[in-house]
Length: 527
Image: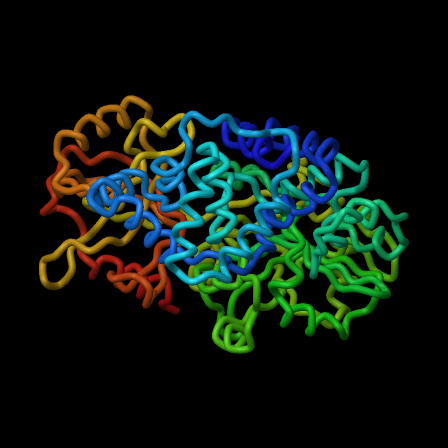
């Protein structure tokens, strides 16, 4: 089994379990160097581009010198350069070789091509592609030019490695941090005995909250609960052992390298400690938005300038381990009391005497930059999962706006044949429609089919897979927050936009203006 076979299995399966099984089988059966190079590619560790996209385009124009329109039309329809070239230039009769290793040979080929002059490179590349199958050509080009994606996350790859060699995933995450050496010994290095420090650095199962409505809140006894804000950040565990400091997200991802400022601040904390809390953007005195926090995610390199413009900090709200002692079986009030004596930024907590105290705190949540409130049983222990009767969340009602559909694109998976990804706009001061959000969910299957038929009949222009449509359909959208943004033409960015309903009762002239969003921002920032 080689990388081409793995790609075919991943590409034809939508199920996460099926993809995981394919990865496990590949790691167990492929040549060790093939699996090492594959893991390097799948986890985004191959940073250098051997062939620039401009050179690939040059090769296409040379191959279709008299019919450049054919390449341009295909490229516009397909939308991906490597896939377009694979369709046009690969040997359509060739059958992919799916057993013998290919990645080491391809890498050598890519390095040789990168050293050649453009004309020679183009000629040699065309000759190479002409003997490859479509899948082989696509993979070769994607791995050469960067941007390789195949629908699997780094976490899924790490999970598959852990299963293939029967190791704890947390240990694999720890050992896969930093530099990765893709050679035949990579699995042997990962199989080395687990140290005590690695055991201590594992995250513990997160305790999750159940949603509550206002009527549910009124059934609770205020004297038996604690209330704090539900912060708009990334849920995480901060772990400090005798040797290391680690940050783990709720998605079981090691995000230590993305937050060096938090790790630096944690150096003064006692060892053998696990805190549950939230990673937030900005500072305790001046919170920034979740959009600002997103600039820190999935970065290969965190620069000093990024740390300065987009700082982050950790706000703790529970104590799971201290001085090596497991605190999870202690009541919440005991854990909170010990946590209060540790020099770390902590989430404000109140012990209400009446239901009005809970409601008042929720009313202040948006002003404080929170999504709502958390209500916790004072005697609750800390157990993994969504335990009934332990923690609840009462989120704020979403902000809303009426927007006009201006662009549509086909979805993915079972929606691949329907135009279900919408770009929505509102009116600016010049009476022009400007995009404010992209929404992918909220309509029923029947509504999606009806909209898809309408979109196909009312398309004004096509831009690759994107259709510009007549600006007449209005949708009410809901979103959790709003912030200013220099990256968007509208000057704003919405948090978690989704469609609430199709407004067939109004016309585009009834859609909201940018001033509506300005009002929402003013209200949310008002003291």
